[in-house]
Length: 77
Image (tube, rainbow, N blue to C red; front, side):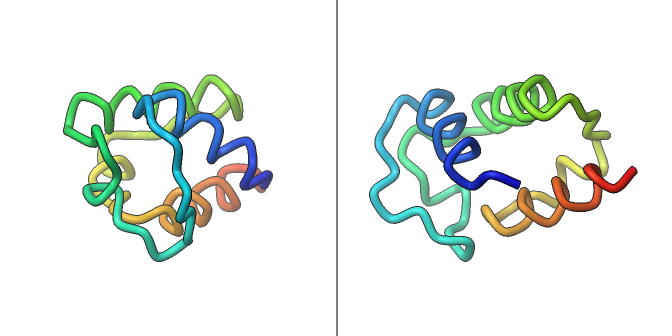
């Protein structure tokens, strides 16, 4: 899992620079985060990493670490 790729996707989706990119960062604390951009982020991640994220998984993604964990799981499938 490439954290730089994820950071780049997030910066593009939220149209901001993430200076403090920490695994513990809550997505709702990121500038320009809203529910619409949350879905946009999930779609961008699906496209970039060639995975499918189901709605129940989307609901559980609250922090950057949740995305990393999900990507690790999905990459093993």
